[in-house]
Image (cartoon, rainbow, N blue to C red):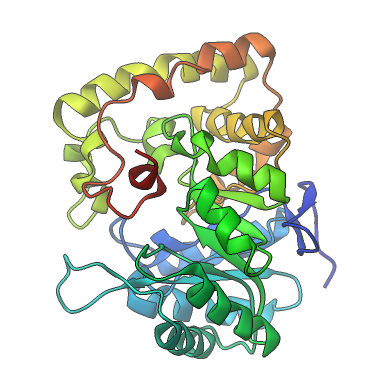
Length: 338
């Protein structure tokens, strides 16, 4: 099948695969953002490929494996056209509030076999450590991941939510193709050290939640508006006085959007692309959506160029954001740099 590459492509790390400069986060298709229309979600996967999106991102934690199973038919139908990314490292139990971090070799080897089975594939293109447990040396965890590359079960390695020093330490064990962490107008913790280290090493950056979990789009102004089961109701920056203060920060985004005849979502995505250029960094944001029309809107953001004055207008936004991005910041890179 001939691929319609309507967006540009870039190399995902040194020697990594070429992918569209915007990917698709599939998490919300199975969990975290309320009810999903499965037919619309499947149509979104197809629309993404038609738009030139080729990096599809999931994880074993999403729906406790159901997200990997959900996208498996799409993977099977388009295996040679897509770059498939999944993750290990966050352990869930029957307790809905429990989140453990596992990076030990035995866990990694079990996790990859489970993901391969659920995804219905023989190889994972990009395998991330979802969170890092500082008590497990990178020599053990990245070493175990490197074994998977040698065995042909994984093609490239990635990390998520690590500091610049941790990225360098891991890279010394085995080359890392991509670093995935939260990066947006609302979340710029990664600019302290991770962004610079990635640029220095030639590691691509894959920002998750580049739309501030929907808040930057204006889709909601307070977590009280969200449906039951939406995990954003537990995030401090979307509730109470924090939400009110943060909603007031969106006017510059709307102002720039009006100037371009664009949406606030498109401006937020264009900002991430151009901010990465400042650092000499290859970036592939992975906004998540379950609707084809939103997919088209997001992909169109890759064709927007912000002016210097517009970037200056947006620059102060992140410094004024109220509230943390998670109720428990313990396992984020920001906590280990504090």
